[in-house]
Image (cartoon, rainbow, N blue to C red; front, side, top):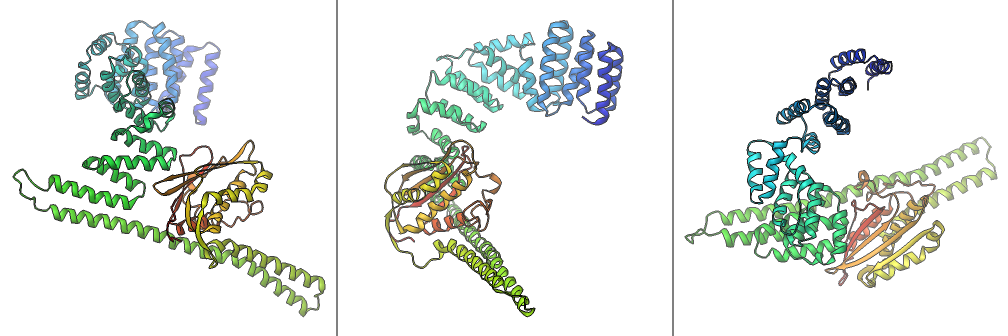
Amino acid sequence: MQKEEYHVSQEISFYRRHGQTERAIEVTENAIERFPDSSFFCKILGDLAMSKEDYRLAGSAYVDFLTKIGENLRHFKNFVNFWERYQEKADKADCTEVYNRIVELVDGDSFSVELKKSLASVLFEFDEKQNCIFIEVEKNQDSLANWINSQEKNGNLWNIYCFLYWEKKHAVHTRQTVPRDIKLVAIIEKYEFYEMALDITEMMLDYNQNDIVIRTLFRLCRKLDDYARADAYIESHPEVRQRAGFNIQYEFVYYYLNKGDETSLLDTLKKIRNSATSSIPISKTLQNFYVKLGMIDDAVEMRRHISQLEQSKKGYNRAGNKIKGTQEERETEEAFWDTIKDMVSEQEHNRQLIAIKELLKGFSHELGQPITNIRYGVQLYQMKMERNLDDRENLEELLDNILMQTIRVKRLLKRFAPIVSSKSVNSRFNCIEHIKAVFLDMQMRLDGIGIETQIDGIQEFTLYGDSLQFEQVIYNLVSNSADELREKDGPKRISVLCKEHDNVLNIHFRDNGRGVPKDIVNKIFNPFYSTKDKEKSDGGEGLGLYIVWNILKMYGGKIRVNTAYKEGAEFLIQIPKGEMENV
């Protein structure tokens, strides 16, 4: 509220407290003219008119109030309270006049969609004739779709909104009404009443466990970006994960993406791949998933599969003659996908070049500081020598400084050792044992901070390469988590879950710290990017995750942050099995 409006509201409040209602109304009406965009004074006028029992003025003021609140629905509760009082105090004619004015404004698109829905939730039972129509539509299951279509054709969204709220309150849902309820939920979902649709879907699941109802549950949860009800359903019906229907598997892709469950996600994509053998629509859907997930090789392979299906199904007309252009179109599409694949490879190459550029820039900066400190120290000592001001104490101070700066350089170079060392010894090793070994080596440090650790999942997975480099990956991740949890109050946890899927190791590395802010997710693997306090952390140069990223690239692996994880930070690592030399 602006300063001028505030002073006027204080004046109105003064007259109101002293029983001068007429004067308060007069000042309020003037304020509405002076501040035409303000909904506040319309509300005040409505309340003043109610206290004076001028119900026509009160109704008019609150209708004007609705036209001015715009998208700010937190003020809508003022209208809800008003309407409850108004129906108790005003006569039927005044209530009908307010209702009709609101319907006119709804039909004239004077309100936002959300405000229309909110109004329908309050006013849906007011029109008795309309209620009789709703009862007839409810009785006749076959008339639902026809009635909705007729309302849509005539642009009567208000009637549809009111009907849906009427259904929510009065409809009875049983085993016999499931076919109708499926249609009803589809209509409710179309108009984005997702919570309402979920309520009815859960009722249907008490009577019917078919694929349509189950996939509707997951789809509605996805649209609400809240899988709590889906989680509860899976917990009570774990067998649903084994459903093979494409439509359910489609929703499971989004569900496992949200949960960061890479193993189940890949398993689901595999099931969809089995369903895509002869189906072009399913194949195209799977291709889109591959592209979304950055699985470009799989997307290119699926594109070729689609081309083969299209050639076999559409390459000939009914007379059996080959359609001209089919071959050319297929070649064009193959060229397009080859280009996409090359672009992705080039993008990865460019990222590596950028990383190297940042690495050299940061390295130059980090190495330049101790060299500069040494040079200035030597120059200062030379000046003292020229003036015969040098002594043994100054010399020792200079030497100590040089030693300290060279230690700093050595520490910096040591941080690069895991990715530049030529002394690596490659062999096959069980990486799970080495994960446990890192935690064992760091146990004293972790205990000192009060961190609980847990390692679950498979007990053996073979990699080929330098086991010390692999341990460096785990060491850097644990060190980052330890620094993050150091100042945390309450329980502190680091956990590792290892799974295998199609000869790929999936590592879920988690801590219960503050998590990785979304605005820096794409920066944390860059060299010399750090959010640490160098005085309090081990390292702090911003090289830890960059080294992790590079070592995993050596193994043909990858790492990313699971932004859907809400209980801290989760890094998802994938490494293919090391049956041959790949490092």
